[in-house]
Every structure is written in C-alpha cells, then in structure tokens.
Image (cartoon, rainbow, N blue to C red; front, side):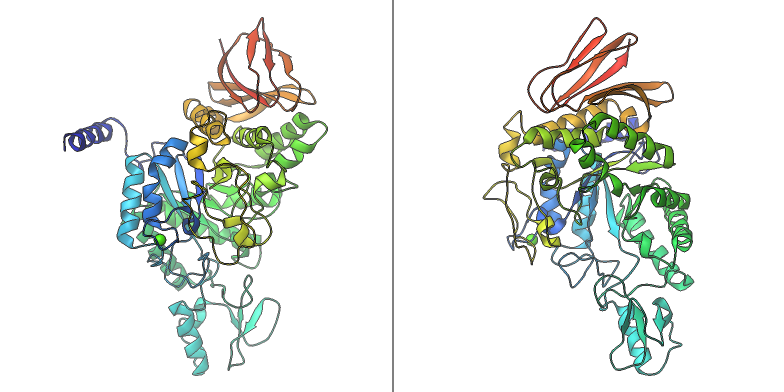
Length: 499
Ligand code: CA
C-alpha cells in the first residue's frame, strides 16, 4: 500500500514537472520496437499472444529502453496476421478487449512508452460489414448503395480485379487473391469513416499515432497516394497534434522521399533493410565505411523528415540469416550498432535484439518470441521452420556480452545523446574501413567513430580536442583516446564530444 502511494506521488510529481505525453514535448524521433502480438507473450494459456501478454512484458520493454511500440494489427480479422480488418473499432477476441488495450496504453504511458497501432486503410476484409453490404446491394442490382462506392467496383474484368460471385461485377484487390478488397480512399464518406476511426484510437483509446500499411497501393499513382496521405496526416494531427505517423512505402529512396511531401512524419527506410540494403551490403563491401557513409549521406540529402531505418520487419527475412550471423554474435551486434547510428526513428523488430532467425514464408518471419525454451507462444499457422540460434531473453539478460545487452547499451547511449536521433550528419573522416561522422542538431553535436573491420583495430588522428562520451563494443578490445588518436577495436563504435 505504501509502495503504491509512493508510486502515485512520484507519478504526480512527474506530471507536474514534465509535460505529459501527447503534449508535443518529446521529440518525435525515437527508439521504436515492433511487436507481433500473436507471437509475443500469452497471458491466458491458450498459446496465442495477447494484449495482456504485452502488458506483462512492460518491464522488459522498459529494460530495453524503447520510447515506443508499434503493435501490428489488433483489430478483429479472420486471418492470423490481421491485415484484413472486419471492425476498425474493436480488438480481436484472441488478443483481448478494448479495456485491455486501454490498460496497456495507460501503463505504457506511465513508463514513458508511446503506443502506435497498425492502421490498414488500403483494404478491408471481405467479411467487413461495408463489403458485405456492398456485395448484397450489387446482388440485388442496386449499384447506387453507398457501400458500393466504399470500394472500387467495375463492370469489366482487368488486372487486380476479382469477380463478385453471382454478378457481373469485379472489385479491386491487390494482395490476397480476393480476400482484401481495396477501399475507395477518394470517397468523402470513406474519409469520414477514417476520421472517426482515427478519433477512436487517438482520443478514446489514447494511442500516440499510427503505422500506415501499404500506402503505395492507396490510389492509382504516387500523386494520388500523396494526396490521400496528406489528408490522413492533416486529419490525424487535427485530432492529436503530437501524434507520430509512419508509413509503409516499400519502394526506392527517391520515391520514399516524394512520399514525405504528404507531411507524414516518417516512412520506413526499406532501402536500408534486406540483403541488398544499405546495411547488409555495406557489411559485405570491400570498403564498408565508404559504402555506409555514402548511403547515410545520400539518405539524409534526399529525405526531408524523420528517417525511419530498420534491419528487418514482419515481411522481410530476419537480419540474422541475411548476415549469416547465427554463430557470429559480433556481426549481429555491429549491425544493430550501425543501423542505430542513423538519425531518426530506428525500428527494431521483436526478437532481432536477441538474434532470432526467420526466412522463407511469412509465418517463418513471425515465430514465437524466445523468452526461454519453456516460455514461448505457439507459432502462427504455416510455420515450417522455427529455429533459435541464440539463447532466449532470460539467459541473455544474465550475459553481459549478449546481443541483448549490446542492444540495451545502444538505446542507453541514444537516450543520453538524443542528438544521434534528432541531428543530421556530415563527414569528418573517411577511410575504407573506418569513419567519423558529425551528428549535429543546432549547437548540439556529437561525433560517431566506427571501425568496420572485423579483425583489426582502427586508429584515427582526430583534428581538435575531443573526449570519449560512450562506446559500443560488439567484440573484444577497448576504445582508447590518447594524444588526439582514437583507437577502435574490431567492430568498435565510439561516441565523442568536443572538449
Ligand atoms: Ca492468449
């Protein structure tokens, strides 16, 4: 009871001394963590992860040092992945209830953790009431019904068009061979529905923003997509000015840069992820530092907004397999280190911090979070391979040299030097295998020194007086700074400030 009273008093004191979340105080850049609820943690023994399971792991999220979580879709849906929604204002019963969600959001906020949810606007489930009403109307030869105009129906066959059984009508569908009909996002009535959905989550439930699915499929071309996104952004910010929105535009850097014209805060930096991406290709390059610097500066020069880099997500092969790092923890750690030295909002996919693996079909990329051999959810349906190369969370917590502890050190460093996230880069020193980057946000400046060599230390003569602010050591060795020369061990990263 006394402990409870103290925590209430401390919470009150915090409320009085710092602006509450959602009041434009914290920078929007942050350390984000993507959670597939199904596979994260089960609270009720049915083997399927749920919202109370996430709540039970808030100590872990706080221990990781993340600023926010992105929950993959939690709305009612006939599929395990839930990207085909049947009701945008409810929780899938497998995951819990709206009250569970309210409790999760409120407990996250008490810990300074923001919550964004997947908002799947491109399409609904065929089982959504809007679609069943539309189909019913067409079967009754009533194409003037308002729900018909919620979707894109045609009287002729064509690419990405699916015949509505028993009629001469076709509906637009891009992803699942028929089960995810595209919404008509140009329809003002659909936009009214979307406004109401966003109000529900941002105002009634109190979430802090959205991850927007499949934005490149919204309309007929990028111009239309950017217009729709501009409306989504303006509407969401009208409801909650501080909300953070990140969009999935799985395309090239130049295209992604254009999507920022919509005003949406961030778009995932897909070109940095995957086997051909900036991180993996730099790590396998003959001149890795030059490659890394080139991509970093190119990204920053093209994107006017908050960059959202990531190593992998629920649709990509996990970074462990891409780097072939299942018996090379130093390489795995270093990959986390260098993606996290990008500015902006770095997103970490659950399990990547402990080196989980997953490739091939989609369910394989979404296997149970490895707390321990005894503590895992069931795997989602369709998994053909669930192998764990590294120990689970609890074992890694006990091991100072684990990938998990390295990842925590990254987040701790970024919490102390937020300019890593909010600043912009310039090249201070560049050789084939090592570099120094200045990261500046106004007068706030740090210098990031990186040794990409897996075997040899790097020595760099610094121009000016610096002091060591922090280090990230993926392998053995230590960083020294003597007489203006910094020595970095293999895969060593050092943060410097000017004296
Ligand atoms: Ca459950």
